[in-house]
Image (cartoon, rainbow, N blue to C red; front, top):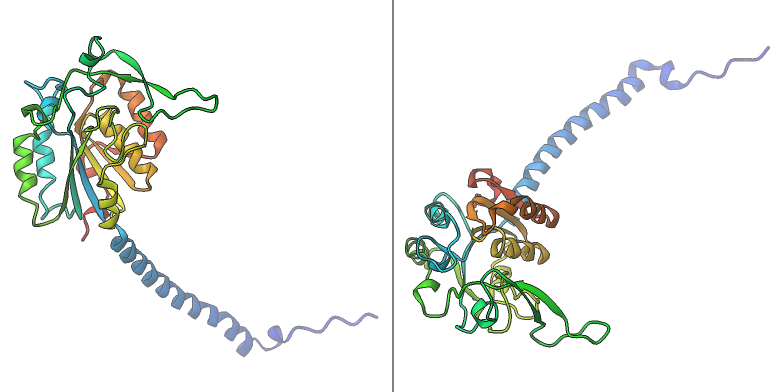
Length: 284
């Protein structure tokens, strides 16, 4: 006859050992739950402290605005009041506000008048520094050429007066930057951090990094050119990037699907209105 295996002590003495083994994990789980809840709160506070956001207003200049701009974008003037409202620091706790603007010499290479062709034509241009490909040929790219616009010192290059007045009033209250781009004759600047060839850089990226900025929100003109390419460049440089579509206007609205795909593919978050932005951007 085979004797049965000994019964484990845990079952033999349930009044003490089983109670001890069952109750301790329950107590520990309660402690761990409370700790985890506090830990999550600490993580949330830590994340808040890490978020420093900047508003970047792209090219809100007279030559891009109806009714008199030489390169006026349809309904461009309609976004000005909404952008000015974003400058309310009591409502939006920006850590940094930047205004960019084209500042072209009169003979800029992307003016159609310099090539004897109609505005909005395409021309092929050489790399401004003569960089070559692997076969020893000078790199080239096709660019759209434009009507003369935002020429240095002209009224068309000035920021919209309503916006400019509000922007200037913030100088002593928040870090700001007035970033000129496109002042080198031989290259285009759809990007506000660098030229289109990534060879010359404005001061803006350095100023944002010095201020500890992690997130940027872009508004302005044009949704499918300078706002788009600047947003893509911000992502490339490691910034979490948002674009508010209600506060931007395109040159070619019929191409919006393609434009929005370019934003999405690059990881830019496009929101319709300011109310759709995450609260953490404005929590000081």
